[in-house]
Length: 327
Ligand code: PBG
Image 1 (cartoon, rainbow, N blue to C red):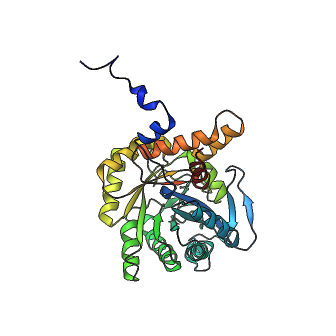
Image 2 (cartoon, rainbow, N blue to C red):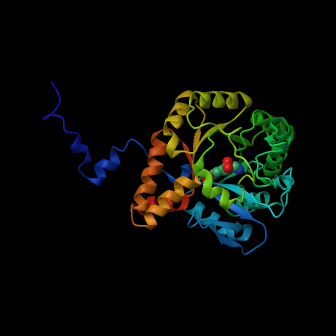
Image 3 (tube, rainbow, N blue to C red):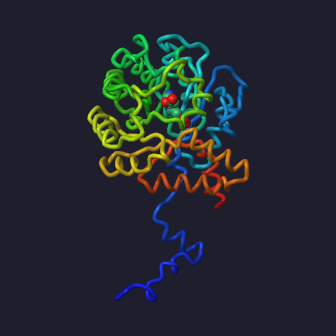
């Protein structure tokens, strides 16, 4: 017979050293990717009201942040561009002098220890804020694919290590893979936002990136929150098309989906702790309702425990610092 009083799980929880030694889930800043919003010009630092501590930054202002992230051991940065001009087709998405290509080149130069990720989507670049070209009121899937490929190629040319399409058009991973390969970028990886839900948790991001749709929503291409078998199907297709990593987004409300994806593929699984997840913690902490540092780390541990290898998070620098200081 085992069980109480012989077995006492509390024995291994007695001291911080014991707890640290038996921890089943490890968290390390190399797992983090910090999302940043880049604008043209210089000396620009616009705080994003709904995302405290996050800024729209010009490239010169981004460099010290990248150095800081690198020195704290943060794994990488993912860039979102806010272009000077928008049009129906989103042509500035592939401008080689646009904010994202310039940010990539600068960060590769000044903080080479970071992995440079480039988000690929049209919504920041189109005048209507939709993720691709419109045919009437509908995003035209197949007509959008070559535009995404052009943007991906511009970012790879600037030096991106990882191309991360977030648009949710069908077939985009294959088209981007072909385009990169034909241009000699066969070694540049693709992390597909394979499982991206149509989520209200993206609210603050759309302020930050100025990318809210002018009408309608993204439900015709982003996934419906109740579905998880469909998530498996999205992952299977992206793997067949050549994805090197797959992502689930948002993270916290979809931990079961992260686990499902982890159990079905051997590729690295990324999870995006999105703007709304971040801002809720910040807002509650500002009010003194929760301990912001502890909730930050606990939320990240939960995402790792559910199976994520990589976390895109606005907490990347704060969490790296908290871990370093043993907070
Ligand atoms: C699309 C994109 C979005 C996010 C990342 N890439 C917004 C959207 O789909 O509307 C959201 C990220 C976040 O909320 O932090 N370019």
